[in-house]
Length: 257
Image (tube, rainbow, N blue to C red; front, side, top):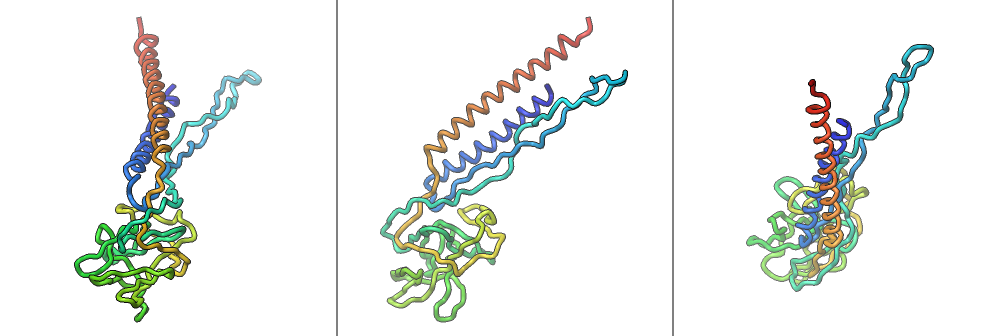
């Protein structure tokens, strides 16, 4: 009975964590470049159940009854890097990646990566994210990697990801790709941190005046939310039933009269 109680409570903890992930997906359904998450669940290692009820030659010996699962536990969170829908805009600063790859941005002394291409030009003429992080590019004249400065005028991005300012290519947008996206850690503000070296020479397609929407399927998330809520309610009733049974066992059956 006690084992069953622990198993049911573990299930409730896991379901609550899954609900948090679904809530986050639904809240970011309209966030550009957002990638949905999915909670990974694994079961605890089965335990072997034995007793000594078996009698051999007048002595009690171990008798293997079988194995018992102690329920499920959280095994981490997976990010689904499937392509979001592309939507055309009329702003030069809006960009989207079609296919694999990420934009490189600088925050402080650190370089991070993002799929959110809703950029803007700050008062100093630099291309930045909505949070003010600098968008990085390779200076075509010097070859140095630095924040992209487009000045106050209009600019274009060609098919080679070159930023053309006043009719001349000034920067090549620094995009990056990775062999295994599982090595990317999701941070706040739609940023990712890499634990492997990025490939800055990978072929990445950047489209100007376009934004990538989130890949969240709001209908699926609503169905998942309802499923989790029903499962939580059912497990909660199981816990209540076990608690009532234990209470009767302790207060009624086991009482001395």
